[in-house]
Length: 396
Ligand code: ADP
Ligand code: MG
Image (tube, rainbow, N blue to C red; front, side, top):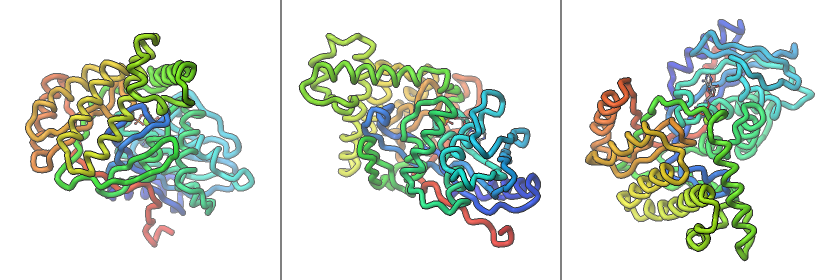
């Protein structure tokens, strides 16, 4: 369930800032990536889950050509921008770029006369849990409803992604937006990023996900994320020039083909492609293990995934490696790996339900001793996806 107290805080803040009540509200969750890392933009497969933390977006239309946005959790964050063709900004208001982008791409130009908007979120920022997609998608649903549009969820996901590319400068895949939109209580989201076909296999009742934020901020824009994406494109082009069948993305290359050619590839491209190709195969196997109830085998794939991130894709970091290694030694832990883009952010642990609390406590203690700071592991079940959030009747 989304945080009702946070919603009330956002509502009071909106009334105080805008001097009226909002006409629409939306909630979009963050997400955790369970298996399949950096595979989305390689047209591959991912298993992910929406989490019960996310972002509320409350809004009401304006008619004066102004967009006014503020954050109920950080009241000093506020920004005003023009309703017509807002441009991305590079200063302390850059958090609004996600919303500027969604507005520019979604609002019908003839009716885009502005809005008052308030956000309130409880996802730690830059923790690999996709606060950025939660912000984009909550804004997208609120704007869709302001204009009474019928935009379907996949199109909303694409708009969120395009906003992140063009306004925030991160060339992300579609994973975060799709998971935020398609999440389902107690189900994983299994996405084929070529066909954009989404399935939702049940998440086992006897397991929990424990998400541990290292507190190491990944800085996707400046970091190696875009560089990794380029490596993947170069590796796909390398195989395209040599394999006898079409290769439009690394999705089209099998591990057998990789093994045949790896020694001849530039070493960096061999490592990057081993990760993506291996991850795709792990997701396919993982879905099968889930279906057969073989959670231990599924968990082993998570450990393999982390090792591949660490050595092949080099998108791990010492704090992530420490938590995965620590988790691996705890009874009741089935698997653990980094979740999301990497270079910091969070670890996701698959745990037997009865031991989830003690595992979380052990991880908290170890992290305190190792990093000298407090860490707050979240014990989660997959949650429901993004949706309009009902406003109390009196505020309409
Ligand atoms: P992640 O998506 O993993 O949290 P990103 O770097 O992709 O990390 O996105 C984090 C950025 O999104 C923040 O630095 C901020 O600019 C913006 N953001 C997202 N949610 C909020 C929020 N609730 N309040 C303020 N800024 C937010
Ligand atoms: Mg993000």
